[in-house]
Length: 119
Image (cartoon, rainbow, N blue to C red; front, side):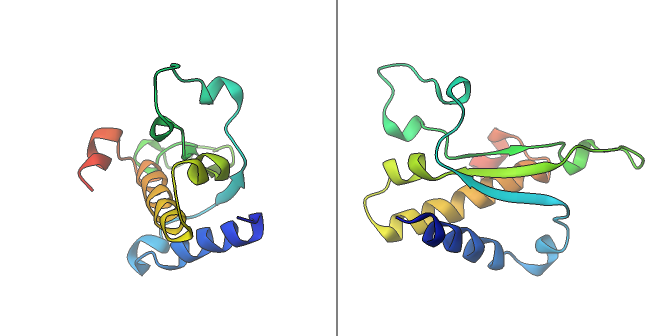
């Protein structure tokens, strides 16, 4: 899939957010990269492609911020090649992008992995 088409899927996922959540997301860049840096993508040889890192939130969750904290830029990064590796069709890619965006926004809002499993 072209990068432009993939970015459109990311935009669709963001535009579909309920307004009550979308208005709370401030100063977060959502970017697409091919793959995570080598130190973030290492996995055991016997792990399957579903253990690939699809995306990540880089920042301080809203629940951990102080009123006067000066925060570094925050980002949500989606890893296109990893998402494509676990999907067999464009529809699956669309759904994985949607799920990954929601997952990483969950981290932005302060949810941990266990809480996100229940969503």
